Image 1 (cartoon, rainbow, N blue to C red):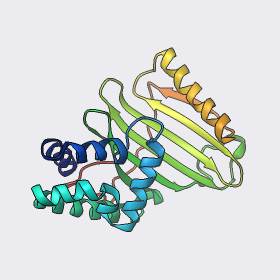
Image 2: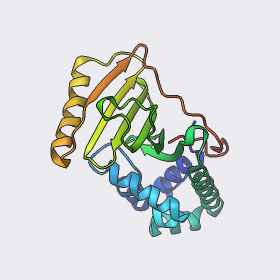
Image 3: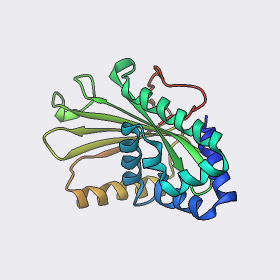
Amino acid sequence: RQWPALQDAVRTLGESNPAAAQQLIQAVLPQPGPALGGNILFFMMALSGGNLQSWFGDAPTRALQRSKPDLLARLKDDFGKIDRAARDPGPGDWRSTLVPLHNGVDLNPLRLSLRAADEEDDTGDHGGKKGTRFVIDLDLTRMGRFQLDGLVHQGEKRMDLIVRTENRLPGGVEDGIRNIFQDAAEVTGLKGGIVFQAAPANFVEISDGETPGEPVGLFV
């Protein structure tokens, strides 16, 4: 499931205003790379304010208003629906935020779900301590379903992470992910560990709750 209005907007800007399209893709849309975390945070901040233009930027917004005002109206409507869905906790007190991820060519669905950790979470030696549980879900063209299940412990700089995939990752890929995790831990001062699960992956299934199915259909 995709976000048709956003895909149409990127395509329309690419045809009518390449400079605005480039600004949107390179500086605004979350995509793999060093700026991914910052761009997701920027999206979530704009979402909480309910202002599409503050996320999209003035130039892309004005360009769409001139060429496709109806498309801009669809985007604003979608933005409001995503915001409302993110505010309402679903089953298990999970709050899911819808975020578009640009892979350099197209937009992929990504779902980010958060909730306060409880005693049922598998925290190992850290059980009983408060923290935040997060789950990131996405579907990759070659790899299939890919899920990050993490727990950030409150009161201490620690994050434990489980990487779940449908099939076992090649050793080189696992080592690469493990190295990224360790490098990030050294930079941030975080402690913690990372493990991999596959076949069976035991994916964490989070109910859609009130997440709108039309026209957005994009899971974060």
